[in-house]
Amino acid sequence: CDYAVALCYFDEDDQLVPVELDDDLMDDVFPVAANIVADEFGDELALMRTPQTLTLVGELEDEEDDEEEEDESVDMDDG
Image 1 (spheres, rainbow, N blue to C red):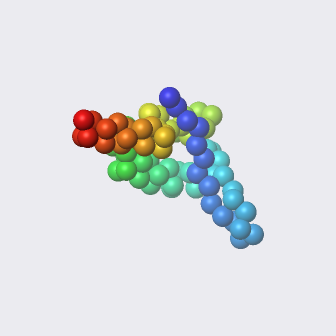
Image 2: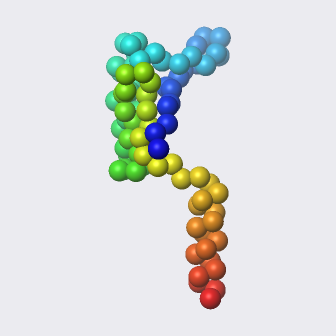
């Protein structure tokens, strides 16, 4: 599943401002953000600079799924 994402910053009035895809700032911050995603998630997720928005490509795990897997693991260990 793919997810639309935005890179943002706080302006001088502490308002959250999205960086537009065609903004020169995006040219500077996108490679940094893409490397962070790659370092943190490896092959599971990738940040792509697609025409309409930034897109996070891959599977995000829900916390509920993680908890269920941990519970199943504990149950198997007990059995």
